[in-house]
Length: 261
Image 1: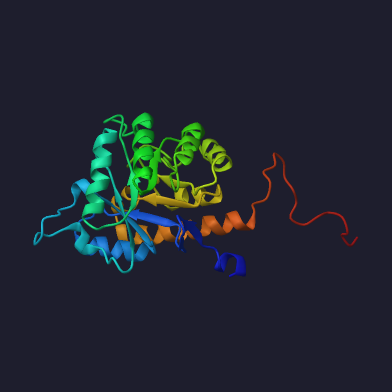
Image 2 (image 1 turned 30 degrees about the vertical axis):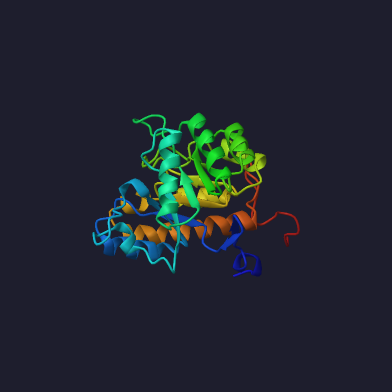
């Protein structure tokens, strides 16, 4: 492995990470599968839907499957449809002693689960003022990405496709514009279905990719966790290496000049 690839980490709000794969914790069959898939993915950050976590002492909780000494916890506001709801959920995470890192989701449509851009921006502005490290789920709109950065968000998380759709990256060109527009990390979130999708996000130059259903919904989640891990690594290496230009016509691998007659 080249020295450049070996030392290739990334920074999020002052914290250094090696893995560029962030994984969710929903939809797994049981706690054992959850633990196994987290470990096999190589992830260092895991996200948890706060509204679906049992917080009453003594009762089984999803948090029991997460080794807090091994993973950075990223509570999320999945299931929130207003800025007020999302803000309340983030405050709950802080009261429970989880973390000031939060993945902000404010959904605007129940069928597509697309984000409500206005409510997301309003929530982000207030949460940043309250000292939260905000990572907002947003659409692939460069203008909104810039507004979220200006609001003080630590990263922007544009969708690749609708949540859980597995459609892969529908608009790589908007993602490239976002990468040119903001200086904070760009983390692709939602819609990744297989390892090649993960590789493409890295080849575009995105800093990380977040997924849940793509692993948990696979026929063999443990094997898919490994595949996603390897796809992210391969895509990042390809980005660092620099692909050849696309050409309409052939270019011979063995030049015709200098041939022995």
